[in-house]
Length: 401
Image (cartoon, rainbow, N blue to C red; front, top):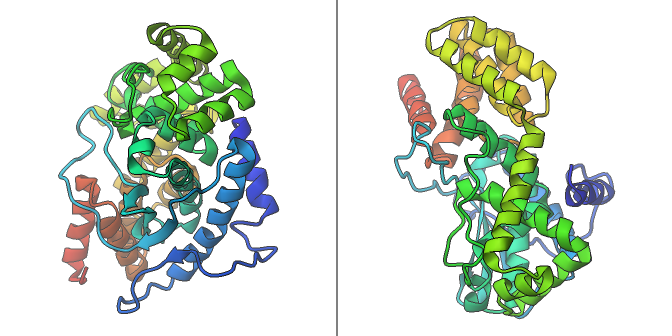
């Protein structure tokens, strides 16, 4: 766990952000919920409670860790229950999907933080780190004071700092490694796509680049210390070109900085996954393609060897899927999937929810199955395959979406 992640865990526990052991008095609800005319979901109050506690903790934490606080631009917080756009993407391609966990944007003079609620109703705690993440973007944007100044900060720094502060960064790195090897590539195949010399944030950081952005920020922290990283962020929101800041602080041109940052990132990936694990996992996928049960034994062995490693979430998903393909009532299949959903890794969430719904239906829980499939249909429309499977399941039951 990174220093920032440990800090946030302590902060959340001390503030009982998720459990409510010590009620926190807020002057008024921060989050704008769905309109009164929309039908309510019984899980909505729990999700709003999580968000109401996470936002002020994020604001205090950003002041303490990075020395930044909201400026002229007002921050508004929204929980949305609209369906995301369906872009027809699926996990068959080589690039990571653009799954919207949350977004921060300018609307006039205001900074809007918006979270897609359907993604978090099943497990409200999933929303807490996302709220911290988006709060980081929002405070940087508000402190910058204008869209132009904020977007002048390179996208990799904005995203990397948000992942660093929220504690999500290690999970994004694990996911990037897992997706790379799942696609048949080397574990570090996601690296090398960020140009440190880009003067502005116009080079958008995609989902596939987020892990590298986080590793860049951890490299900066290792080079400059927390005080140095804080100074870079503070100067960036004041409009100072980040390229100039890095050249001055690190006494090297952008190309040299890029080489040093890449070396750091590759070393970190090598620390997280060794060549033997990589080769065994590749062998398991080849066996799986031939329906050879030896694949399951390899997955179980790899999981036992490193239950919190970069492949853990993928292994739990694969084991759960394989068990339910044999028997949709299999309790071990459900247990594997539930264990995967308890991890912070988000790579296989929609697929796992669809399969859990099918397991629930097989064991007689039609209502629970319908709820999960509606969540996937409404919350993960960007991921075409699981969303389509959820809709097909609902259609077969004659359930209104």
